[in-house]
Length: 257
Image (cartoon, rainbow, N blue to C red; front, side):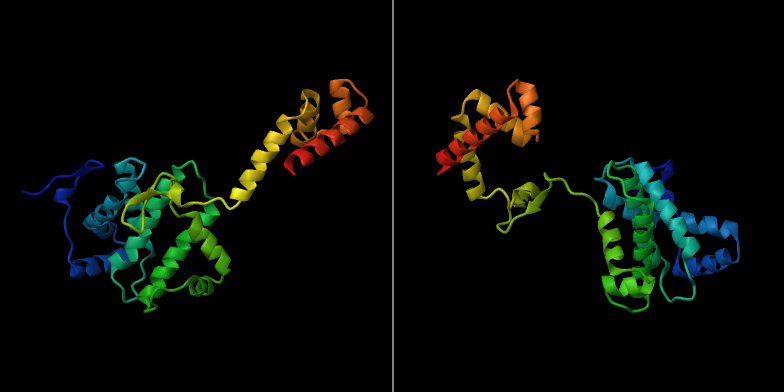
């Protein structure tokens, strides 16, 4: 008994399977403009799309929408497939389908990536697949950039831009085998013990000042106001503000020594 899965109103258990010979014959007809052969080829490769879509079940987004995006990638792969290369269609189509699904998920994400950058990344994936089909094993960024005639930094930037964002609460495996949160693996080099101690000492030193001196330091160093602006706000002369500020700073330095 076959397991029935319906997606986009399609019973996936009833999808036909095409042999390599059938696919080759249909592709020749497609390149000659046969629309019926194109439709048969699309339906015959929907199982390939479904196998890829399963990788994205846990992602945000409607399963039907993800499947449709995968089908768009399949159609793009059909239209761009070059018979001159001795490569299986599925080898060429898989990164195209994955790229289109990821494009769909990013378009629905609050983190927006410019169309030009996404198009560059799409071209990078396509170029990498072509190079692998030609026998280049795991082409590096520099090789792909040279083939595309763009800067290596642009290739790297485009690939980084389409990478799925991670949550700080995503689990990552620890050395002992336990799952830790990503946020537990991130350090803050600025928040050293020395800086933390100085901050505590500064807070305590300021707390010893009078209310007017604390208010002047707050306006001066937190709000960035000039002594003239402070004098107008609290109703004393600029010279008095200057004396109070200097006195307060001396007291703070003395308390921290």
